[in-house]
Length: 117
Image (cartoon, rainbow, N blue to C red):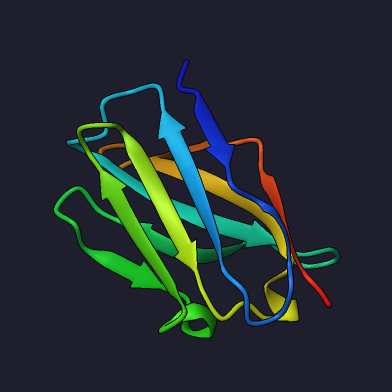
């Protein structure tokens, strides 16, 4: 059973920064994409950013230039650095690990990010 442990959510003022981290209980160096999704109240879960084993990245248009995703294959972790946060970034953020050979998704329990003055 794959376990994903998230940390780093919280309350921040607009313009502030937060850093989310996710540690996986499996070796992610091959075959696993890692990323972050978010779900705001009343909305569908949406992609925020992902990273592939070779270091490729993909971002939602709404976070480009503000968020940076990175992975450490040696530590089996993925991190999301969020800068210039906006109230519309408020959501529950979920860590995702996707097994590229089958497409199977693993999910973390979610961490709340609230951007408010």
